[in-house]
Length: 127
Image (cartoon, rainbow, N blue to C red; front, side):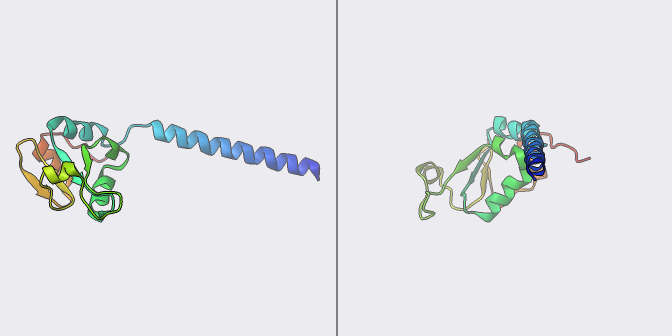
């Protein structure tokens, strides 16, 4: 009985180790849109949104792992009842709002192709 318990514990530890290794390895891989998101940030574009906004979440999902590289500004207060001063000053009236270097704004979830066009950034080709 003890031998079976030891084998089960060892097997469990090995499985947990393999899963941990896979998660760490995957998290270190660059996102598909890392270069694109970095280019957008370098272009002077800004993405204004709110953490509770479903369209903002969808826009971030478009970027996948690369979402952390987009030039995002959170506009909502933690209680969802107000707007942060940075967005008041920028006169943001809806989410999501993209503002580009030339001052043009687009509201709503903006297609990746449009972001590429507005920022002169190359959108990666899907394989």
